[in-house]
Image (cartoon, rainbow, N blue to C red; front, side):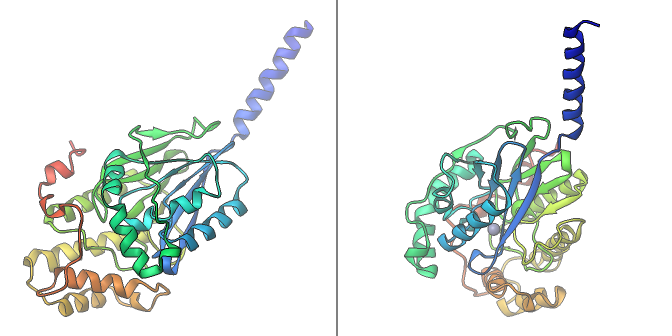
Length: 327
Ligand SMILES: [Zn+2]
């Protein structure tokens, strides 16, 4: 055997060994509790780099998150994605980016446009709640990203698929699906079993139907792990408990409340129905869960205080458009 062939064989064997031991990406999640509105940020960590999905609402929470990220990985954070246009998923992202120079920031083009259109109003509103010194005043806008997937450098065999535009607790959400590890980062299409859902954007029956269609689609993907958009604890995202809670909540909403027509119940009746059907949630560790349930009751109850929307959500009344992905 010539030396060249021998060396070539050795290299082939070592390449094989590398391909056998190569690990797919992994996902670590962080719950932004209290003023973070229980929003879940997730980091996808690859062999050479990492990226983050969803950014907290306040500067204080962004700093906490940055500290946590640096503790769990030394890979450079190359990209950030925001899953949808709600401010608890992007508002103080710029504060996080200060800690990770060179990061690129994205959202799907519809969500990016929606964020562009309403960020200034959200800054003003949330500065009033948390203080102007705890909210980034000049929001960094995401760049439009409409590829159907991305791959971290060195992990092209473990792509992350971007499923969008799908309806969750609002329109035009992106869900992040990683088949190599059976993990779905569901954004606000799935809520933790310990919370009342954000319902105030569901101004039409078609929007509720469309959210349910997304949830049913998730079931068909058969994920091993579902990371919800909000929860109180990240003790376990394995299995289907959060998924089942979300499905049951939406079905109850659709069949017992929405089906009666607008203004059928008073805010108190809606509050009581949801807290009776999903008992124990108001005693959870969430500081904002009561507020969330009150907003739902007021927004849909007779004579209640309506949530301000900057998008014409009441015009989204065509399921065939919202579920255009379902052939
Ligand atoms: Zn959210």
